[in-house]
Length: 498
Image (cartoon, rainbow, N blue to C red; front, side):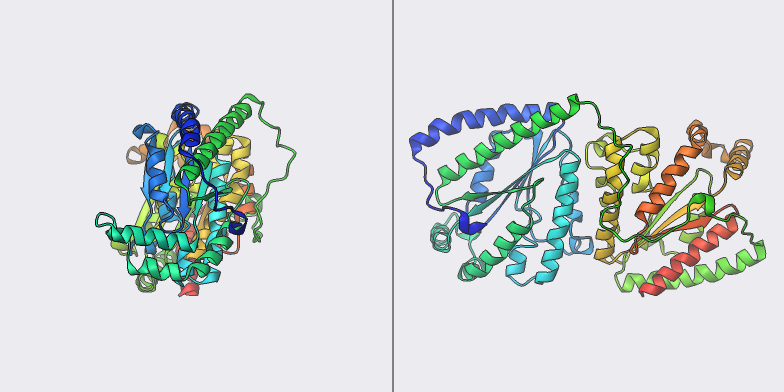
């Protein structure tokens, strides 16, 4: 892509002044339209060292109301950030609906410059590029506008600018030996940048290559692109909202390009298992003892463990989690209860809050309810669009693929009981003063939609049971049996990894 760019583009002061003023004024107006229409905008500035990214970014943000944007200068990952998945820190920086997020470098140095400097292998960099494409597509599918600029200069121009910075006392600190060493390796960087641009140039997040020898020409091109892309995105959003929702009911549900593991439907699950209390106590004691040792093992080997609990109301998730955590060092795990999303969470892509809750390597995160709310309660209750929950199966598989690729053990439990057993437990809770807080009007409303939820659960299990994150059905009609099965499943999974 870089070889097609004309670096000799220039612009006179007169032409620049005539064109730039209305563009800047239009951008200032558009930011308010962006806010009013709830359009998240991500503007990314990448390019060569000394290509002028800082100057361009500073010029752009001067046109914006500081209440309507965040600016982020991305540095190399810290030691703590390296203990999380590659995209973890970048997911945390995505903007709320209606705001701009402006990046002075972003997720791309970890697949471009780092590759050229041999800090990551080519294979690892290419895998990360694929992850970036998924991330950006998910953001675009959720309504975000992604505008990516790469500022390009020649090797000779870069050397000239580095010399100029080094000769000035006020800017000499910005140049070091590494910059000059990289300039000598310009052709290696060029090859890595060019492949990065080719591989991550997509319809939902295309690259805009900017010849940056002449700052005026570069700025004019950037403002033209910003105004044009934002105007087009706003028009598209308004047209989409004005149109009737499409009828998708005849389309088959899709899991994306993932190999799935067959699991039974809920109707096919046998719930007649029994367990005497004496056997339960014996196996619980043995299981907790073994689990305590394995917790130490995964900490030492820096293996993250993520356990996701879903199930019918009153299926016993709380008691199941309690017996599991009794065996764990409290310094090495966290139980994360998931409730309805808060307003800031609703204003971001639905997976954002779960990326924020991931554990460090060697630690355990136990989710009491999970990211599957999108295809369960949100689907059944109509809290998201049909297009949103249909798209989610692929997104959930992609999310868990990222976790597995990071090295996490991902376990997913559906705690299953039948409708009669649920009714019995609901009534028992109502009649027991210390347990009455566990039963709500919402539980009864959900029960009335049992059949709709069962269809949603069967679709969820069928479409998101992958080899790296399969569902385990926990027969919880007998709570003792369900607790033991969960603990022993966790033990088997850790032992297999360790």
